[in-house]
Length: 220
Image (tube, rainbow, N blue to C red; front, side, top):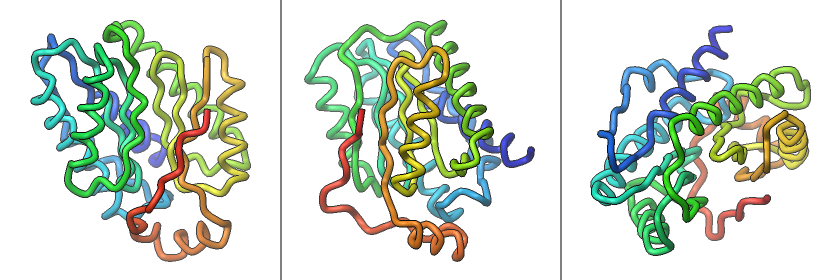
């Protein structure tokens, strides 16, 4: 139960890492300190690195787009950054991706920003509730180590991040797709063999991998 509470706290932090043109960026740094999960396949250091990236990049993007109608959510897993939310045009999307790619310690960027008006607070609240439903479905699925997968939901699209085997990734996507309210599932996994996953577990998560030459594209 403690681990689930910590994971939900981490989700609360990610939900706060959003940028809007009409509201200041507010991040509860103390939440990040409570979100370390021992069954995460990242080391504690890697988890801290990811949270540092999220905080720093949220501020960098906030400064860059302070006068524009944008909503950008920043999530990082093993220094691979996922950008979701809404921006007004393709130029803004490209600029956000470039800022993320240039940010310290970021080794890959998955830019899933939509060209659309910023989502409403009601929409974002619904997305947060949907993410909780998906997490609950994962907890009840034996084939999924739920603490190894991060869930991000934007406009009822579920993004799944993590260091998983192909089998785990397939099961996770299938389970998420069956949750009521989910429109689409996008896999942003980094795949590993079962031996590599077991090796990470044996050494307490393992260090973050070296920069990838060609990171896998998200699968929709």
